[in-house]
Image (tube, rainbow, N blue to C red; front, side, top):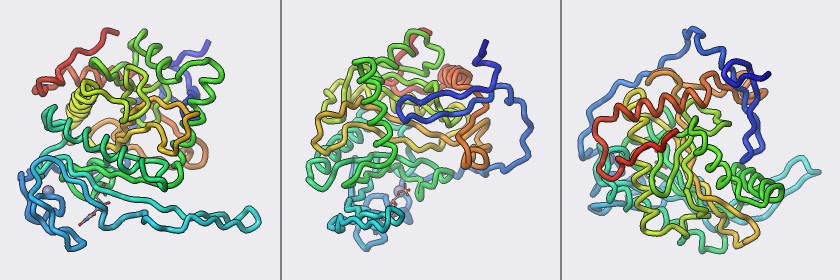
Length: 356
Ligand code: H2U
Ligand code: ZN
């Protein structure tokens, strides 16, 4: 009999159709590899050299306004450019390319240089959520935008160029790879079961509670059964909401609170600020109503065991498939334990961990 706590195993990700190798027996392996330097510098509330702080000059020569809440601007080094010809090139089915018009924006979460989402109040994060909703609507309404990818890279380890709290929005003509895979996952599950994959998954996870991290009225956080990154989490809307366009006022507050709660737990786990890439997946803005989506966010933190040891996708993972040692169940347990040690919860983020 396969014992998920003991035996090497493959786990299936029904969202992407990919498998991950889990090796629970390998946890005690010694480590003599790279140790990341996470020396914490004290950050000032305002940094005159920061290109995201209010009133400062950006690289393109534009001066930021003296903003008091959030700020959105077109990325001065945009990876995508509007007006790019969307022509396709195909040489013998071997050399295939197509032009990708798009728009890249930067979203500053706060005028304060020294804060992170975990240290902001619910109304402050709510302002960020409102900007995301606005960006999704505004960019998604353009005929040449079929997908709006909203994300945050936090921490130098994840390649963030600046500690000032900020995220990015990339809007493209084509659906990106991960989105194409997930769309197939939702469709395949609905054809087989007549229901939404993530509605069903959430019910299943909440009934056992084994992988539950936290939750509130409208959102629920789980370490997915198929997680690749050690402390990867999935943030799910409890009701079937397809995208930011369908979020009520209450749901937006609830999302703000859960983001604060989850990032506080992460900060507590090893040492703040915990690095990660996070981002939202939701309905493409291609006007194709056949596709059914369930709004969710992925958090992909790279840390394994401490603030200094990170996971690399190398070796077998590059050539074969992703692999993990600590099981998703143990990771969820550790995140729940960390939650119990958070000293200062922002008032509205204090909601209880669902029993499990
Ligand atoms: P990251 O830290 O996630 O890389 O985001 C910062 C973005 O800010 C980055 O994409 C842009 C970079 O191109 N940027 C500007 O748009 N203007 C600047 O003056 C510097 C950086
Ligand atoms: Zn700054």
